[in-house]
Length: 328
Image 1 (cartoon, rainbow, N blue to C red):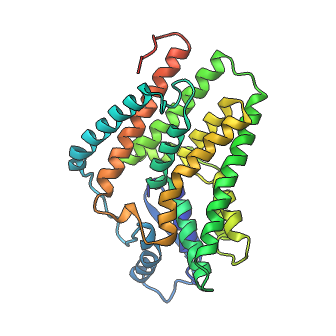
Image 2: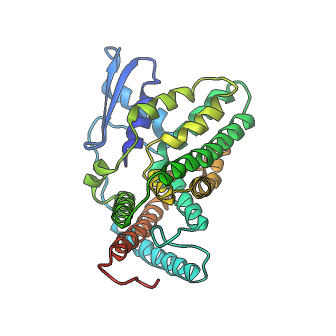
Image 3: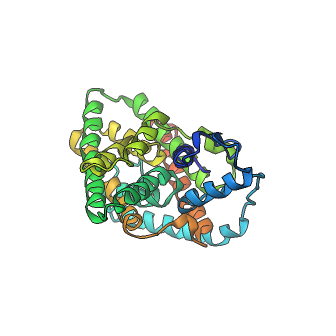
C-alpha cells in the first residue's frame, strides 16, 4: 500500500466479503486484519479470496509477510525521462504556456498537467476503486454508460464549483508576505511527500502524507454501491473530499488565489486533467499499476513532482527575499 487512500480501499473491499464484519488496514506494516465468521476458513483461503477481490486494484494478500525489493534499475529510464520532462516544462514556461506551482500565477495548463500525473498515481486509488465498484453495481442492471457519464459530470462540476468556493473563502483573507510564504511552503512540502511516496523507496514517508478524515472516504465508497439514479453523480461530487495529496495541494493553491473564478478554473483544469485516465478506467480494464512499466512510470512521476516541490520551496525563499528569483 502506498498511501491512506490505499488503506481505505483495502478495508472497504475486504468488508464486502460476506463472512468479514470488520477490516483494518495498516499502512505502516502493510497488513490487513479481518474479523468475522472465520472459524470454517483457513488463513490461506481468506488471503486467496481477498486477493481475488483486490487484484483489480493492483493488490495481493498473503499469509506471510512479503518484502518488495526496490528496483533501482527503474531509475536508469526514470531519471532521463524526468529531466527531459523538466526541460520541456522550462521551455513551455519561457513561452508563457505553463508556470510552476508557486512560481507566480500558475497557469491552468500546469493544473491540467498535475491532474494527469495525479490520475496515474497511487494517490487516486480510492477514486479508481469507486469507479470500478460503481461500474460493477450498475453493470448488473445492464447500465454501463449513463452512470459513468454522470460520475464524471458530477466530478467536474464539483471541482469547478467547490474550487470557486475555496477561492472565494481565500478572498476574505488578505494574504500578506508571511502568509503567502507559509502557504507556498505547505504546498511544496505536500508535493515533496507525494513525490517521495511515488518513488516507493522510503516507506516511512507514506505515514506523513496528509489526508481528509477517513470517514468521508468510507461513506463515499459505501454510496458507490447503492444502485440509484443519482448515485453516480453524487459520488463524483464527493470525490472532491477524498484523500488525495495532489487534490489537497491544488485546493491550497486555489485558497491562495483569493478569487472565485481563479479557484474554479484551477480546480476545474486539474479535474479535467484526471478525466482521460479515469475515463479509460471507467470503460476498460486499464490500470497502470498492473503494467510491467509501472515501476518506471511511478519513479518518473515521483522525480517530476519532487522537482515541482523543490522549485516551489525555493520560490518561497524568493517571496521573503532570502534569495534572488531563479529566472526559470
